[in-house]
Amino acid sequence: MNTELYEKVRRNLFGGHNQNAFMQLLTARDAVRGPLQGTPEEFSQILYELTRGELSRRNETLSYETVAKGKKDLLKFRDGSLFRVVRAKGQLGGVLVVVTPYLQSMEDLLDTREQPLARLVADSLSIRDAFRRVADEYRREEMREASARAGAEIRMARESKLENIVSTIENAKSGETVLVRGQQNIDALVDLGFVPSLVDNPDNWIDAEDSPGLRYRHARSGIELLLTGRERFRPIEEPARLEFLFLVHRSDNDPAAFGNMARKYRACRRDGTAYGMKDFHNDLIALVKYPEELKGRTEEDLGLMADEVENVIDRRQELDKGILPYEAVFSKNTALIIDHVRKNRIPSREVRKALDYFEYTGMITPEYRAELHQQISAATEDPISAGESAADMLYDRRVKEIVADVLKKIPKERLTSATITLALTPYVSELGFGRLIKIRERILKLKQMVHEQ
Image (tube, rainbow, N blue to C red; front, side, top):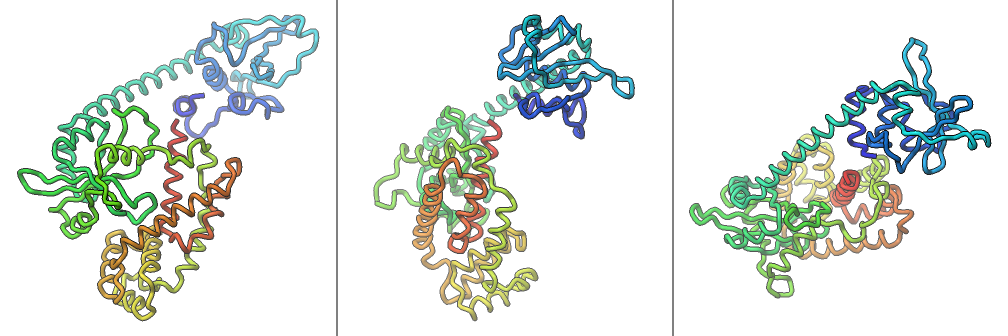
């Protein structure tokens, strides 16, 4: 069933408050124990979904049979379900269609004739006009969707032109994300002077020890651009339609942040070997494909329930208690926060984990977090930024080990939202709240993508 189209038509015909009374005929016929009744339009929508509007041809899902004795009209599904359909009058005088599970007798079997479904709609139930209204609404919605797809293709073609991509990149501000569609456009950017290189752990995050990126100096203005590849899980196999996201840093917008990123750019791998175009392609494609260990999982497997995540949040609050003073964070009393960190000699990694939590929960803005992080780093004897790169590299490796270990321990049939969350909870003090949330967000992205397919 095309659920998305079904919901649109249902809302158009019946409004958002009303659920189709015959929905179980599509989703759970085995669970129907008593009569289902609804309007002719509601029945017509379910019939349209089952037949795609083809009432005069044989259908692989169901057939319409009549029993002359007793004038019985039966819907027979290929899975063995059998329902009797009756036209009735409602309490307010309107027409109702009643569908009831039916068990055939031997006499019925001897007296059964298969008929086209059009006969059921036009003759037995006399709801031809209702079916026509539903069919017309489906066709209108299909035309709207076709128009939207055509428009999307036109936009995609326009966005895929190299000159438009270059213009978008050059006009982007620091912190913006730009999309480059098509592997051929990546190659064209390199031909124009964008240099492929690696970024040393730009996000302090799993799978980001070596992230692919591009570096470019504008010939006329001298402005430098750094583009860092971002994850975008899209199961698109055509190289011309692959969508690559890049985070932009400009030397003229935020020189300090740009300088920090520039120091993380490298022209070769950690072992000293050259970083070529083939490696660059492979690393970019890895950002837009499913992680191997999550392939084949169902939507239910990949989902994380909110109440389970709440357990992790509560645990994080307990662990963070005493790392930073909550009241000072609420009031943005920077001096008191710094004094607390220095007096209690709180390790830099614990400070960063606490800041992750405060930013995610909305207690502080990303801007204030960055400013506070910088001031704590400058004010403490053991700066947070000192030696962070090597530590983060080891830390990311540990995160990968934890994720791999959890996925290895849980059998595929038991990989549910609860088991994943509970398996990760013991690591919350080691992972940090921010990293744990990012794991959740990554899986939720996969969940959404699975839902769209």
